[in-house]
Length: 97
Image (cartoon, rainbow, N blue to C red; front, side, top):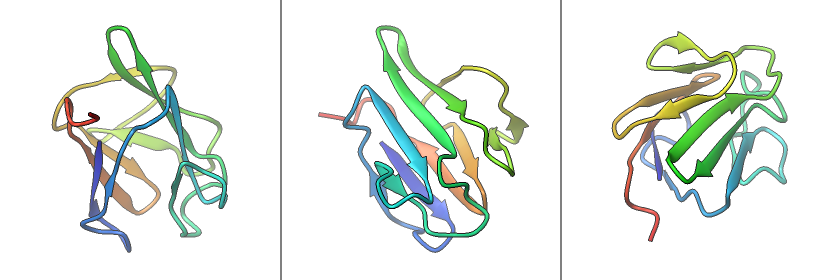
């Protein structure tokens, strides 16, 4: 699960229901973040056999994991902070049931 801690959706919880969850400004994104700082197709979170990984998919402003710019696939751990545009989302592991 991702929990929004900053941005217009602050306090919202987003389940990671798919093997690959898309995040972006496109209305068909699994997690829709309606803000100009977010690209239409911004980032993906993938569930793997060893946990969750996050990858930027060519966004204009980049994606940050714990304040580090993401390049390639990055594993996510409980409590990690994902920044997408002006949104901050905290990863909560083990809550997808």
